[in-house]
Image (cartoon, rainbow, N blue to C red):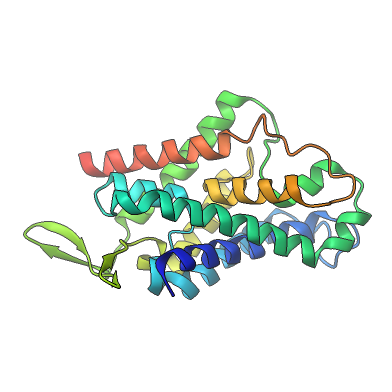
Length: 254
């Protein structure tokens, strides 16, 4: 498996679990209807766990453009690989959204609330205030990337005082990512972020997690789906990338 294919598959797995648990909780006539926020945050954490466990050995399991760009800014990932990784992640997110729709197709048809349908695919703020929503996503993503950078990583060697990645696939250094932390610690990190900081905006903390499925929502023939809310869509893309760069900057400063 190439790193790019791994990122597509890993991000699709993440969305299949994450979008799937949201669908199970909010859509009409599901077994998990109205089971609440704790179920949603655990579902997303398990999506991270399975995705990292599956593709970590092949790409480092970034499965998040904020992780990719944050690592590149910290000097721990090749900038030449950033755009291919990000495109793969967005495509994986769209595929994941498609899979969730296929599983819950009848329940989308049975659900009247347009906002609930969109909420399966993408985030939206409970109180729409772009400055506050932006700040929330920046802080939440900062914690994610800062945690990733500082958690003990067995995948690194110190060479002449510099951290060097040891994952090399077909002669290409793919850098480390969430997979370098092992599946359980990073899943718990994401769980904690969702529980503590997810209330205001739904904690995108991942541009591919929001943009990929939002594109799927716009393209899929979902009855009565309404708008894909593109007016808000820039926040879960720009704010996580900003938080990642700030985390990397502080990491380098310290």
